[in-house]
Length: 566
Image 1: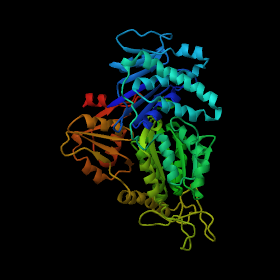
Image 2: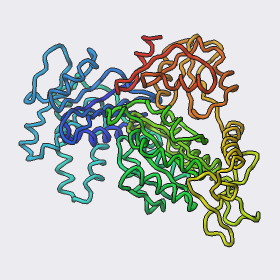
Image 3: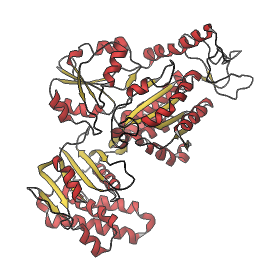
Image 4: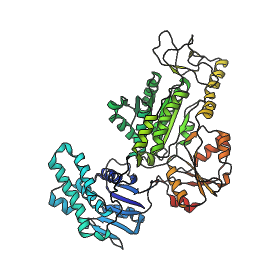
């Protein structure tokens, strides 16, 4: 059984903290979790909502109806009432507002409790959490343990003070509205061994596992939390984290660090990446490895900074001027984000080229459950591949850009005795000296291009197929975070299959053609207005998929809207 709890209120009510706490409690109670936060791009004010879906089984997408709606103001009810069903429970304070209509309501006197207990207005969310746990059948002790951890530095008096508000919220429900209570979050005897993390957390963890030693960024929603996550791990992971003055400084700093021999990455969104693309070309011609994390949001320009979209795929594919190889990976969930991020650093080193890991606001900021033992197993089995990286070449003279059959030359880490090479933005001969001869130009362009064929033969992975392509009459084709919603469609609709791309560019023409041999059965599911994955497939393979289901209003795609359009 799948349930959804939602809390909403004005910015400053502590909605984000409250929602994350509920997710943690659900996870510690033994349930799979997926959450999502809605908030406007305002410095102050506006409506915030935190949605948590939890279940016994894996949660791919949010539930489309709300089981428990906690309203810290009237706007929450008005904005979310279309998501309510006849069985939904609404938790609110009658002193704030009354609810008209045939709804199951549970009155919790937030304001009265705060007045009598001399609590600050921000503590309304603590009362709300207590009331929420009672409504869904949760264990108050789990909330109390989180309060103890959260306020341990402030002493027992503060801990007891906060616990009392949580208990009053809990008791308000159990004493007065027992008939509305659900047995949805009853703690399990053997809770799952799992972590709850965002896609940005997963990228950070993947970078640490891959031995990234330099991360540079300028804050830009929705990628910003990678900067703070990795900064918190600087000491333990021995990684240098730099908050640069702008995106141009960001990527040039990372290219410099990578040239010096350390694994380097940057993070941004579409607008920030636009400032980076000249330097992406620099990495292309100097053949410098770099991992670029792009978390997409609706554009163009500032667009809608706190909402989700997949509108930057083709921009990433064609970023930079001139012709040089790059690799684009599109993880679908937190597990794939960890694994593909770690793989991105290997690919960047092996092919000495930019590798772009693409996310979006939905994947970046939503928390999801993942098995901790699964993460540890991947970490322990991870074998780093630095490619043709050498500290002391054997060949004399050393040719940094030596023409090779696979397009890859030995990359010297600067500092080797008696070995020198030039690296600049100009076209060059094999030893790195600037050259404008036709022969050198043809040779170096061809050398760099051969990396693509080497990658396609060696490391390219076909998209994952879910379901049976032979028996399916509908095949959903997607990439990135749309994996989850397409899997929900697959689980609720017969004769359906899903093809999910993670190694999205470049594509192996013949192998992808064989996989998509019946394009008339295929339906592209994308969060943009032009079907960019479809355009890329046509460009790379000649396959034209005519059917599209597109959403580009900034909101996550839902399974029901896909089913309605099939």
